[in-house]
Length: 256
Ligand SMILES: NC(=O)c1ccc[n+]([C@@H]2O[C@H](COP(=O)([O-])OP(=O)(O)OC[C@H]3O[C@@H](n4cnc5c(N)ncnc54)[C@H](OP(=O)(O)O)[C@@H]3O)[C@@H](O)[C@H]2O)c1
Image (cartoon, rainbow, N blue to C red):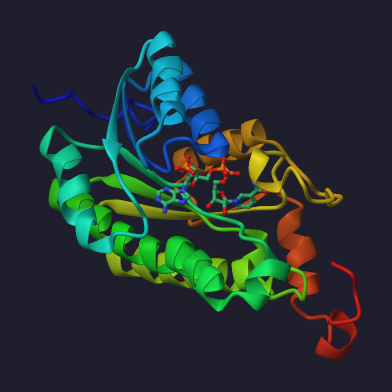
């Protein structure tokens, strides 16, 4: 059965496809958009009770929610897994939210584990992003929102494996946005500071730490404005433009 889909008069998406269906940030965004009349949600992710539980919560909020098996580490499967979703009806918003933090210290000693972080966050996103971009372009409308990170802005000693994967993802998403400019498809890069989720639960919190709900609010506003880049919190943009220019010799001595 085809799922109906169209944006309302304010450009609020009514049909969502979330890649990384158990992501706390993505689910906060889905909850917010459901209160703004999103009607259908696809949660794409590795099959698990948690994925089904997440779908159940969104259903309880009134959204027709389905799950679809999707593994970022299986790029050969992306076309068929995601193609199935688009074949069911138009999608107004794709939220690319999967990602792993890894463990910097362990991963430096385990190159295969380090490569898995890069494959999930970067190459998995290249493949899934291109599949979704093609499908959105075929529809002639829709937004692709990509969860990048402030960590991608400048490599830090403490998390350069994760940070470099996000730098690659961020550059890819910006280029894709330029490639799709004028087609009716909008790409928005979201760069949060540390967000209080299970992904960073073991880490020390930075001064600009934020919440999944704040990221969701920023995404909703960015969609309305058709922004290309969104920082969360907004003050992070200025902070990071200063950080970008700190001389390297000094930067490596800072315990960031
Ligand atoms: N939390 C932060 O501080 C923060 C800051 C900036 C940016 N971000 C980025 O925002 C995004 C969402 O983060 P979050 O905090 O909401 O994290 P989260 O709750 O840990 O969610 C991560 C998601 O990635 C999925 N995932 C991991 N490996 C996958 C794979 N191979 N295939 C498919 N899905 C996979 C997980 O699925 P499973 O349930 O199968 O594990 C989960 O749905 C991530 O890209 C993260 O890097 C987070």
